[in-house]
Image (cartoon, rainbow, N blue to C red; front, side, top):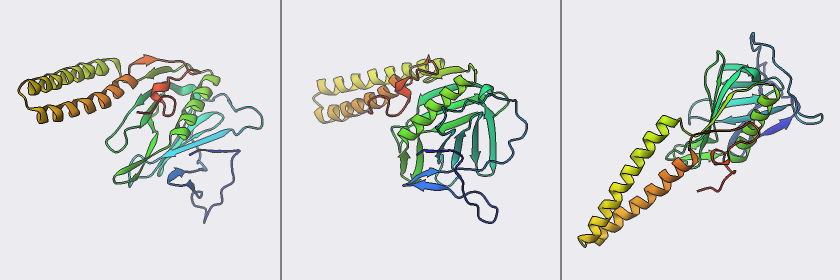
Length: 244
């Protein structure tokens, strides 16, 4: 979920952290970040007059842990998790990678990785843990946040490396293993049919079909490549390509 607002006022209780705002089960927080420390000067890349300068996105990377909260300000990407917080001026962002990262509890999950000069690698996921057996999707909020992040980076004059999918070496090694496994399962199905073991052939054939669908989707979406900040690849963004 997203909040568009011009530095919305949030009441504090006993000088503590600001009250969060939630809609449904998606976690949304507007934070009053403390002093960010000393950072390099960065360009103001505020939206057009009348538009909101800040965009906020949050997700829960684990069921029990604190949520990860991100804010796009006019000059920097700010993040907070629990008692840890920092900001990264847009011009210090060096590399971004968009990818498709399904897990057992959520087959439609996406990830953005952000590397910056002198800062930790940040990971932004499109889902939140909702219960032990369920993850909640934030497709529209995630996509809008990532698109706007790229726009502000470009407007600040930064030129980070923009990559999509899995790293090349990892991708092709994984694809070779996938192809070998698929051929082996196909051979087992054919042998079972020749031997008249139709039940076994059906079982192996069904598993082969599921394997091809799940892993084929993974490799199709995560094919390595580069992209432009104004043309994000739809296969690694939720809602931008047909859902499987």
